[in-house]
Image (cartoon, rainbow, N blue to C red):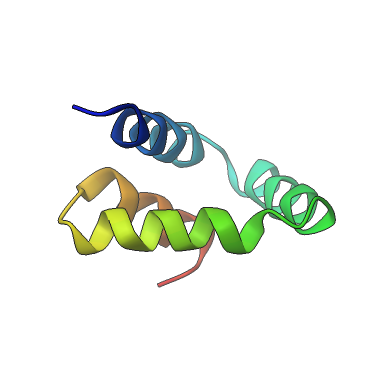
Length: 64
């Protein structure tokens, strides 16, 4: 496994562990840092490659 896969997988798992309030704060912070688009793009690519953690993270963030 390459490092990118492991980073996305770890990030996806962390997102799935957040409660709704923490998700809202996480999204707000990413928007402020202008990193939300980058994260969603990376998760979309991983989900397209059939990585269930990435799909679950997108669902949890509300980006279905």
